[in-house]
Length: 244
Image 1: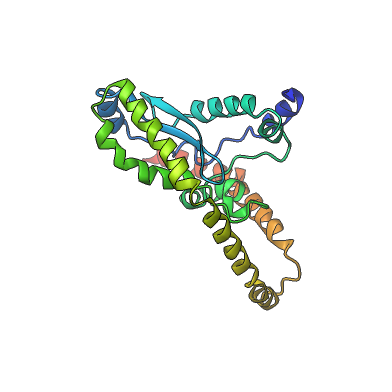
Image 2: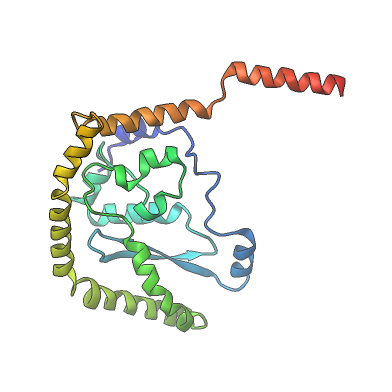
């Protein structure tokens, strides 16, 4: 069941446009024109769980990575997993994030809100499982480029089933154990962290999220030019237009 009032309230708090929205472009116009002139399906949009299993796959039809694909997948998953995933997605703590690898190419304002590195409770997850799967999936591009619609879907479906069974599931124990040892390695750096904090005169780790909030507010204040500076520039430009 949807919590509509809660969703509306949260929607009203995100009116500001993302600083990366205007700059982001997945496909150049020239590449898109050439691709769409030949192919209807321009790629696949996938959804994985945090362990790497393929939950859903959708064809991207004559488009790049548009928001309609994750929205459609979210709606489908919420209907299929209504007692688990749906409850989490409408909770006040739900948020969308940018993967650790891609996030560093985004605007700093965007990073301070959406970068996985700063998300409390995310642990060792880097949110780049899809990229790792795409790197393996690219090897299938040549074999399905000129196949029929049916055989293309058949090949991709078979590949994903094989990947889940013989790659992800077969390595699941190793994946969990590796994460456990990595977490222990992170915990062993705690004394070094305390030493660095003491050297920087930091008494409590709570200062970290506070500093991120302060940085966000400062950078946000720089986005809008001061009125005095705007008036000075306008005055100067009018003098230039008057005398030259």
